[in-house]
Image (cartoon, rainbow, N blue to C red; front, side):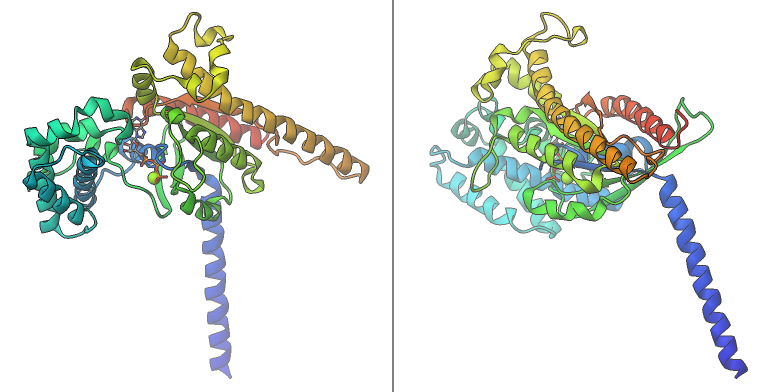
Length: 398
Ligand SMILES: Nc1nc2c(ncn2[C@@H]2O[C@H](COP(=O)(O)OP(=O)(O)OP(=O)(O)O)[C@@H](O)[C@H]2O)c(=O)[nH]1
Ligand SMILES: [Mg+2]
């Protein structure tokens, strides 16, 4: 009998311990600012996450750099293949053989010997005058290539060295589609709360259409959504069966996120990203009005945006206003819902909920170039201030 009692009290003790542990986790969970990165594929979510790691998190380990090395090398292989694709001029037998060899190698990863062979072959093609002449100058086709192609092609001989290890900038510029959910943790001090470091968890998910159903898993308890939009994509279409302008796709996604009932409590911050690429594209004669006719009559009305501003400034403000219009429409909808809810509650004698963030949300926005560490540092300091303000509002301190 005493044995049974002993076993039972042991069980109770263990279960109480588990309860305490869960409680402390919940406490910890509630004290952490949780930020979710959302946006279309290739908008720059993982780049922001990597920057956070560089600025406030643990340095990249050697193992991570070795994994990144494979990605950097295959990025170069893909750039060379992109350059070669569609050209009739690759008539020389040895060039055709080399390109076909590279195509075969591009699909196999994880074998270091093959990886080194592939990057050497890519280097061989890029150094070959006939290949370069056949594919034309890089500049002419730049807009169709990965954004950071020039950077990587200039580093091809460094990257093909067997002892090469990627730098932080190589890791930042390297393209690798996200197919899972990642989380990083970091702490930051703030001038607004000098004696208290703030803790953050940042979640990154895949932005491609096939990845989006996974997002829901991280929605619970999120404080802020960082929505990232690639502003340079105004002249690009999605690869789906029914292609869509990529800015239109991002606007629809943004609207869906503002509407999501799981994210109603989360603050929304918009990163209007890839400003460097947008600027270059406009400078080279890219025309937004070919895709968005309203742009031709768009004028800047806010002095802060500049008067007589150049075409690039006008372009970036126009794209920003497309997103802010979506947010404004949603704010009107949310305000109507809030009014309906209040009058329903009053009718039932239910007191209005205190400390709850107003459902009609303002959207905070920033122009960003996520590949520039200093730019992300400055912008994220502002984001942190915004989150502190929201938290103070939530506990009724402001
Ligand atoms: N030039 C430039 N390149 C950028 C910028 N932001 C991101 N990139 C590059 O764009 C590519 C895609 O960026 P990612 O961060 O992987 O995009 P993502 O949103 O995580 O994409 P998915 O994982 O497919 O959803 C990478 O090669 C980045 O280096 C930017 O502001 N300027
Ligand atoms: Mg990603």
